[in-house]
Amino acid sequence: MGSPLTKELAESATRKLKAVVQSGRLHDIAKIYHEGRLVAQYGIRRGSDRNMLHNYIASQLHVSQREAYLLGKCPMSREEWLDIMRSKGLA
Image (spheres, rainbow, N blue to C red):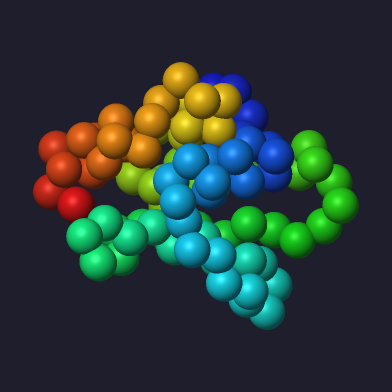
């Protein structure tokens, strides 16, 4: 498995992707829109543990574990992520 995706990195990716966050019953739901269309969404677990793993987010963003980690750590931009989505016909 690649680098772990923690809650802190998930929240960082949420800000970078300009996701709209809605409160859900168990998780907050981050929804990413492009040109007015929902292209991806993922849950952010509630809880105070900043190291709580969120590795499932990679598949929900349609990227590898490493790419999801890079989104959270900053080397990958929203536009680079959208390019990946476009190449897969998802944006």
